Amino acid sequence: MTKRVRVRFAPSPTGPLHIGGVRTALFNYLFAKKHNGDFILRIEDTDQKRYVEGAEEYIIDALNWCNIPYDEGPGKEGDHGPYRQSERKELYRKYADILLEKGAAYYAFDTSEELDAHRMDHEEKGKTFIYNHHNRLKLTNSLVLGEEETKKRIAAGEEYVIRFKSPTDTKIILSDLVRGKMEIDSNVLDDKVLFKSDGMPTYHLANIVDDHLMDISHVIRGEEWLPSMALHQLLYEAFEWEVPQFAHLPLIMKPVGKGKLSKRDGDKLGFPVFPLTWKESIGYRESGYFPETVVNFLALLGWNPGTEQEIFSLEELVNSFDLDRVNRSGARFDPDKTKWYNHQYMQQQSNKELAVAYTTLLENKDVFISEERIALPYVEEVVALIKERATFIHDFWELTSFFFVAPDNYNEKAVKKQWKEETANIMGQLVSILENISDFTAQNVESKVKDWIGDQGLAFGKVMPPLRLITVGDMKGPDMFHILSLIGKEDSIRRINKAIVELK
Image (tube, rainbow, N blue to C red; front, side):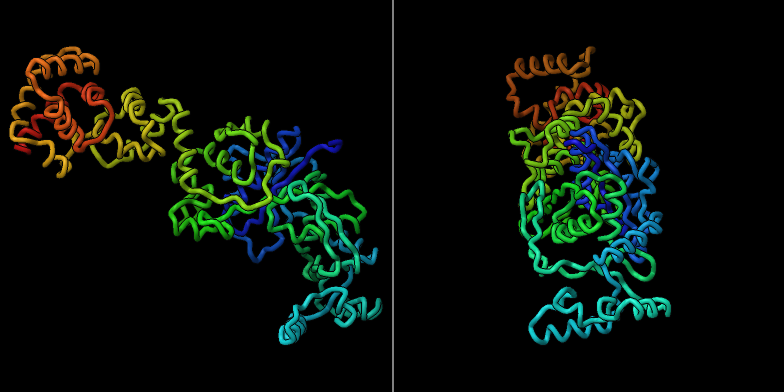
């Protein structure tokens, strides 16, 4: 690559950023960083009717949360700004005029009603109406009207659009870094609208002009833009500009297979489709996912590293990423796999990092927890015992509540199975053993209790399961002696005595 690599992510601020958009941004970022290039964010807001307040801020916040920040864009002005198309609109008329002068575009005055009538007429005949070389000389445009009549109509304030004049009987050869070589017959292309009389360009013109002026070397975008590739290449050629290299990424498919992943799929199956919460739709961040999780699972949706490796740091992704290994076919989204990734990243977090996050959750719990038990060192010890069983930090309370507050009740099925006629007496003897243990470490408590069980000739099944039930409230939790040691002697004995009274 001789030209400096410059790529762009160019979303429209018409709503929240879908994870498909995040993946497009990620692939652009990885490619740029792999080649020591630039990753640009451009906000394509020419369609002001669909503009949604707060959407631009959401896009920026989402990229920052995923740790894939842009090098140039809104708030990070470089030499190629401004980076909002609404702030560049004065540029586009100039380039529309260049195409008109070259004969590569023309004025069209057809009204919406006239075009609708043509469409209906074609449908009745079993045909599809396309505004192109087949009929452009039968319609109301400058190719038919001539220069003088065209000027009169424009001067009179008549509404018009500027259309691209697609070539006739031409084989267009396209080259895509993901899909290889393709051939398109120009006769199937319509004469797309490039500019409107209200002074605003359409996506096609603004996109090409901006990519050229921003020195974009590679256009990496979603598969949905593949049908526009021929037009965009023709526009570059009409301007006599260097054509960037294109790469069209495969769709992210529904969990069930066919069809593009949508918000409706997330609502139906209970998983996020947005990186951050947007209105009533909860995001990955608020659902408890780590940003590293989101980046990792998105990277492997449509890209294959060529190895068995599944867990990648961002640095490893940058080093490994290659457009040659991007798949052509759609990638099926697997909600369970995303949870698996989060579990893996959970295990990579230090106990202290997790404890800090869990402490915040505990402070918001509407239950009484002593300051001693909400203190970071205590929470850190608790987290160390259970984090292997957790997928999200919000799982911690279900796994550890008994470390902070004594159970209010006991699992009924477990009581029927574990609490026998002699259990209360055995638990009373155990209290006496615990009372005489001064060094209440897990190791020492385990040694003393097991010695007592052996001396009494008791079966472990008569002691340990009911002890877990009355200490925890259920038949769950980590090593029993670690639980006793952490909640302490006084609370351990208090819980046993309470159960002896309530379950007799």
